[in-house]
Length: 42
Length: 532
Ligand code: HEM
Ligand SMILES: [Cu+2]
Image (cartoon, rainbow over all chains, first blue to last red):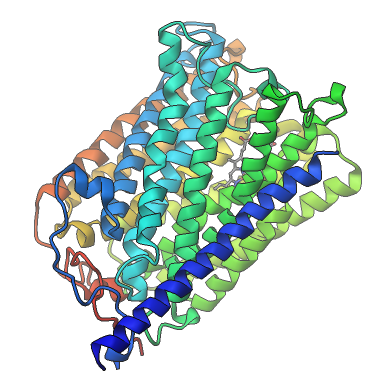
């Protein structure tokens, strides 16, 4: 296996990691925003 | 073969990393960050402990001796917040940083820079929490948050600026936890070595995966609740103000919707330690790996549907009382499965009793008492009597000190030789265990009886008939506090030197982390191992 392929693989992995991190972060932020928004009129 | 897999650092693993303060400030290395988490946790453990020594000194006798009631309340609340958010959670996160990459065969955590941030948010957060104490010395404000860690409205709406400091501190702590959890989830889902299927993952890793999911789902609820508190305090909203059409009970619901899962957030990582330690010192394979994974899941899911058992007495419709009672009691079923697996793991094993094993066995017994007394409290009819009494205080210290802190100590002693490359002093370790176990019980057994006899919690003075048991409890507490200095000494001594630890450290130890040298190289696995 040559170096170039390994670097591709590494980049792909890092992108996958960042993507998943954003999904989880957005879920968290959404819970926060939804809750306050939903409760504001109660 | 291994060459076909990703290893993020194979091309530059011996790069010179900065030394001195810069190494720690800018580090993205999971071991450095893990070490910082654990040192931070240890320091805050001592700070929080010192505060409660003040409380136990005041409670040594009836009457008011040493401090004003406001200050007493502040000590209690800040003690709890520190122990939960700045001691127990950070030690678990520190262990996660060290162990997860090694256990799943990864070079590091998935998001190393984020990791640096997760840690460095903690010291400012802790500073914010204790700052009002210092400001008060200079005549600014009335001291720290005095509401207890639960921050119930309307007290917290009316409280002094200590509440604002606590709110901001909780925001920072929450962000730190969420970032750390994101990192844990991504690392576990994306960075496992080839062949490391989900079901083959070590139980500590599994426990942390579920912990991280719980944090991501429930910390925002706490953050939302304290944000609403902040706007009620300063921006004329009325979320928790009955006069303005709001509802103070809403705060209790929001707080405990986070708060109950939080108790499992604190304990899941510890339950993750146990099978590793028990099986190593019983020299037997872990009993019920799958059963434990399923129990973790069951407890994680059920933990978000039982929250109102913390305020049965506030007034609820009967069906709600029944629902929260039975759902709470149902959680003890998966918990019992875990207990069964722990006991079955050591059953008829050829056991030896090194310090980690002592702490692990102490954990199983004492945490058992914590769980059983929880069942008592979950009974609506009984809770009417015990709620807000010292019985509750004793219950949650059996879960959080014996279950949480002593369980964490079992893990620290077990993996410390791996981290430092040296064995700790076994004789001192055992002494530390016995001092801790005995003085812990001396402190908290009397509190069960005080609670049963009707002594309320969170008060600086009490009726005369409670005197003797309070004296015993205070003496136990001072001994417990002093014993922990020995722990600090043992750790420093072990970091400095001592008998060289082998790769495997313990005869019965299993797991990928024990295939690495002690201490392991800067980047754990530069070439990922293949798991059969
Ligand atoms: C079978 C297991 C358990 C049951 C049935 C249970 C039940 C309860 C109940 C009903 C209360 C409320 C008592 C009251 O305020 O009147 C309570 C309080 C508490 N429990 Fe547990 N519990 C269990 C395990 C745990 C665990 C594992 C932890 C922590 C790791 C924990 C930590 C706490 C804390 C911190 C409080 C007091 C909160 C406060 O008011 O400040 N419990 N428990
Ligand atoms: Cu609870």
